[in-house]
Image (spheres, rainbow, N blue to C red):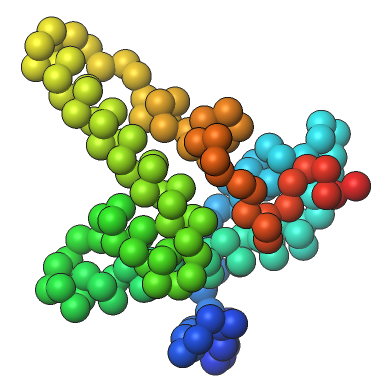
Length: 158
């Protein structure tokens, strides 16, 4: 794929390279995620999956690049959840920043809980953070959350 210059709608941002095919999310995973929000028996074209794959990969690269810049300025080598939250805010994606902050907080609570269980009982750990922290699925978001206006809901497909 040829390198090109892409300008983002966000101020003062220019992406100089497109995500190469080997750096993209696996298309099977993208398709699986897309199917989760569609009614049963819905079909998704290969082109739609490829488009979503490229967009999601670009989005992840864009946010990660912003987080990496913060780490570089602070002379750190590891990106953490707080860096991702900061990147969302810096890019004007406040809705995602708020949800991510709650996710990071709850993950840390879960992690501390698991550590205390292990220390206090020496019991095997069989619970998963995904089950505990699924903030982006129905029912676990705070009551004051609203759907992000540029994210389609299943009813908007029809």
